[in-house]
Length: 207
Image (cartoon, rainbow, N blue to C red):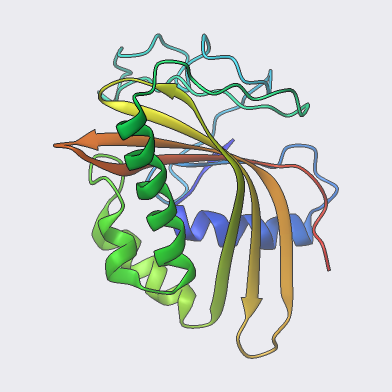
């Protein structure tokens, strides 16, 4: 599992899957840094007992970062919504998630950066990477089946089926990939922001 920046991660994923569609491991994880290490998810299933850093939720790894309890579904099993999500918080989380998607699709860099948690992203680096990529490409993400699969007062995990399209502005060539994404969102003083993104490609790129 290779860690890469949010926007660059989505674009790089599309390009990597286009060039290497025969690879078995199409799992990508955004932790707010570019190529800062690799990890492997052996199970590939949604299992909230397994932590991203191999530790129980709320524990610290050697770098001092919280272990993040995130699971994925590679086999296409049923996705269940968390039962403990208050209605008003569900609306706020979905609204924040949609804003994260819509601002990037619109190419509004300032608004997109406001949807990110500084606890998970280096905003200056993300701005530079975003502006560089959008100068030459159009990135469009289309989520479906938006489901809050885990919830607490401080953190929520939003599962979606995600179609990612990246189009070269000059050649107008486009790659489209479909996968599953878990977006970890943090509650920061009543505002839900994206802390990290975990993505698994489902199939070979579309033409």
